[in-house]
Image (cartoon, rainbow, N blue to C red; front, side, top):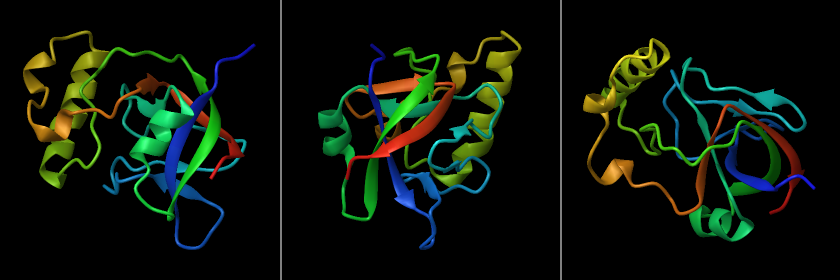
Length: 136
């Protein structure tokens, strides 16, 4: 039996498209569609999902956010420095970090060590996400 994962998303402008929850930076924001694979826009980065429905519900802050059951590619608990609510000034630093990671060079000096790096409980990093079933 496949393990279940959950993604919290916002609806994008009254459409059937969804976007990254609380991550609205144009250079890195991903858009999700039901039953289609979504990959990170920044090469070498990851997307985030939750390992349980209860963790996804704890993260969800309003009725305007939706929880989907999803399929994922290459789940990992290994943290790579991504965060939600990233201020715009950090996007370029994040992009550089992903580039160095792909080149197998040291990037840990670029990790952010403040309130923005505190991940929600149950966060799992994945290479791709496919929304499969609306939960709430």
